[in-house]
Every structure is written in structure tokens, then in C-alpha cells.
Length: 280
Image 1 (cartoon, rainbow, N blue to C red):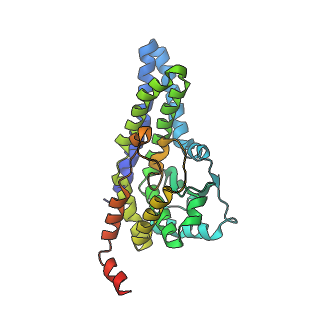
Image 2: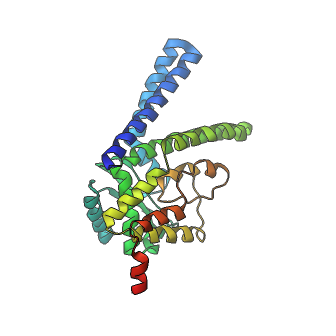
């Protein structure tokens, strides 16, 4: 499928999510208080939807503790991202750093001209240049395909629903039992695992080889077993691969295909790689 088709579908999904959110809030207002309350809830819903669209990326990055990485701090990394963004056909994204040792990356934004890519300190320290380029290209593919336009509001809306359960006092567990699956249903309905496979294939074209990303996925999966990680499972759709153990609430938000399947598909893009490896 062409990037333009992916982009159109994701923009439609984003409008469906935000429009549905506003409509649901207005309907709830009508149910509890008629037209006047519905009008108030509708306006509040519009303001919340606008906040999610315009400020959603900042809210997500702030919640993860990311800070902007200045050019003077990592000129080579900025140069690499700019070169890959040009090859991917998107504007150079703002670059952010997650100051912890868990190797992971993510992309947020409103589209090809307003996006950000965040890399953890652990990722920058762990992977060699070819693998880092594969990961960055994968995240830029999400920007090109407008996956970020859907992923960012989905994570925010799902996060709000999960957080609502925390104000329930002794009812917290019951509320989480109800609202957790509701939040996860948004992620599962709007974020297909196919988006990761499409981003992998696009990244391979940008890099000129699928093996950097394939090797990076294997390395990250192995590293995750050695480095502890704690975060809200609603953020799972943002990352290059699932950093959470697929148990409990985290299992409901799993939107990534298995790493083995992704690596197999990437290797299949270059069927002769085994023969060349033996010859070397």
C-alpha cells in the first residue's frame, strides 16, 4: 500500500476518534441533563479534542520525561536524523532524549511537518550506527504514514480512561476492570499490527537494506530482558517494539506483531543475504 493511502486512512481514523469522543461526551450530557448540559459537554469535548490534537505530542513526551536534544549535544545524531528524514520525505522532526537506560524509541506528532522522535539514552549507547538508522527510519515511517496522528490521541484518551479509575478509592480495582478494557479497545480497534510491518518495510527502503532494522529488533528484544522498565502500559503503541511483559493490563494494549515475524519479513526482502554471509 502506498504511503499516501496509509496517511489518508490514519487521518480518517484520527477524525473518527476525536469526533466520536466529542459526540459521546455530548450524548452523555444529554442523558444526564438535556439540551443545556449537552451543549456544555459538547463545548468541553471540542476543547479537549483540540488540546489532544495540538498539544498531545507535548503532553505524551512530558509524561515520559523526555527533553529536547539540542544540536550541540549530539550533532552527528541530528545529522543522521535529518538525512533519513529527507530520504523518507518528511520534515526533519524535533529530536528528544529519554534519560534512562532502557533501549527504546518512539514518534509522536500531528503529521509529516510537525513531529518528534524520542530516543532513550540506553538505545543511543547500545546499538551501532546501522541499527540506529534502522530504528530511526522505522519511526520516521510512522510519521510519513501519519500513524502518529492516530497513536498520539489514542494513547492520551486511553491514558485518561485508566487514570479515571485511580480516583475511585476502594472502587479503584472495579473501575480499572471496566475502564481498562474500554481503553484497550480503542487501541486495538484503531491501531493494527500491520502498521508496524508497513513501517518496517518502509524503513528498509529508506536505509537501502533491511538488515540494520532486523538486527536492531533482535538486539532490543534481548536487551529488554536485562534492563528493568516501568511505565504505563497505555504507551505500548508508541514504541518500536513492545517493551512490556504481555500479562495483565499490558496484554490488553499489545498492538505489535511478534519480533520473530517482523525479522522474518525483513530478511525476506533480501533473500540472498545468507549466501553472501557464507561467502564472506
